[in-house]
Amino acid sequence: MTDTLAIHGGSPVRTEPFPSWPIFGEEEERRLLQALRSGNWGKLAGDEVAQFEQQFAEYHQAKHAVAVVNGTVALRIAMMAAGIQAGDEVIVPPYTFIATASAVIEANATPVFADLELDTFNIDPQAIQAAITPRTRAVIPVHFGGLPCNMDAIMDIAGRHNLIVIEDACHAHGAEYKGRRVGAIGNMGVFSFQSSKNFTSGEGGIILTNDDDLAGRCWSIQNCGRMPDRQWYEHFTMGGNYRLSEFQGAVLNAQFDRFEQQAETRERNGKHLAERLSAVPGICPQTRTADCTRHGYHLFSFRLDQETFGTSRETFLESLNAEGIPAIAGYPTPIYRQPMFENQAFGPYTGCLLDNPELDYRKVNCPNCETICRAQGVWLEQRLLLGTERDMDDIVRAVEKVSECS
Ligand SMILES: Cc1ncc(COP(=O)(O)O)c(C=O)c1O
Image 1 (cartoon, rainbow, N blue to C red):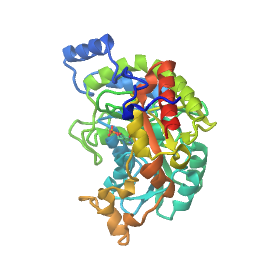
Image 2 (image 1 turned 180 degrees about the vertical axis):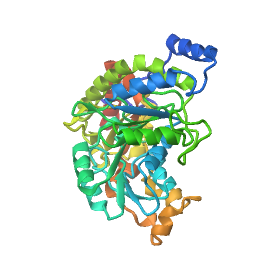
Image 3 (image 1 turned 30 degrees about the vertical axis):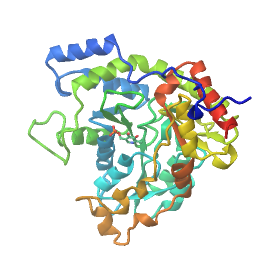
Image 4 (image 1 turned 120 degrees about the vertical axis):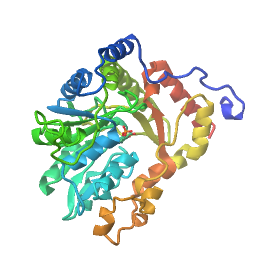
């Protein structure tokens, strides 16, 4: 006999909480105090941020790293360093955080949305190809939830059309594509260290690149347009103060010691969960491509095929939450459906409108992204994957229970 769902008064599958986030301890305290007592609180004075930049670059097999205040600014700086400007088009996925697309607006350029592959939630290389015009200058693939995009296909298209590739790896710390860490496969890669991210200092970001010239430009832009070894009050290019503080550097260095083990735990649990959940009719975990040699698992995501499963996503989530599993629906709309885009509320950044007087994001339609946002997408936060295999089995049991009662 099937148990009564918790939402109808039955006992929940789980009452224990999942691991909380962030995780910290004595090493974070020690490093923070050391930075405090040193009196060197800014990036230019101390060595915490410098040490972190070096470690993070090495870990991701990149030549250079420039740490900045957050991932949003990292994207902005990458756009500037790439020379993106009014008249240019930049191809982005519609299923991402607003910053991926707003960075293009801030560069006075035009974001062009290319649809996802339904099964991977990642930008479809064929849709990139179809979106290319003579004005296309760059593409920003987002490794959604930590699953690497099809980088071979993307780099091939970029090579043929002379496009700059900026990987948005804000979900993908430590993720691997064919054994190579993401972030420096394209011309530049950006990461976020915001509170929810798998690697965090509350706020923060970083840009990786193997290109000496781009690295120099990013460094200068994050430091008010200065140049190394030149006078403090000499400014050579448009930039700003986007430097990370030593306190954030201290926390990030301490988090490094925890990261690899956490990444391995997420990888193990994520694989186990995907394998077991895919046996439930109507549950389609994000497809892990053969090229993904390690998933970043910032999010464990799956699609709920309502017809096969037998219930709407709203009812599914209410039922699952009542069973003690904190699943969420994720991005509610494609980015182009956000009021900012529909109403062209771009503030002073009107470059895209001047160049395309006909531009109307209300006419954009990416069907796979619409389906995922409107009806099918479900996310579990990364902290859940830091639990035990038994915790994963609780998630599966709860989904099975909801399935049996639907
Ligand atoms: C895909 C993606 N890109 C960019 C960002 C921006 O990073 P931050 O929040 O550090 O500005 C985020 C953060 O949520 C993100 O998820």
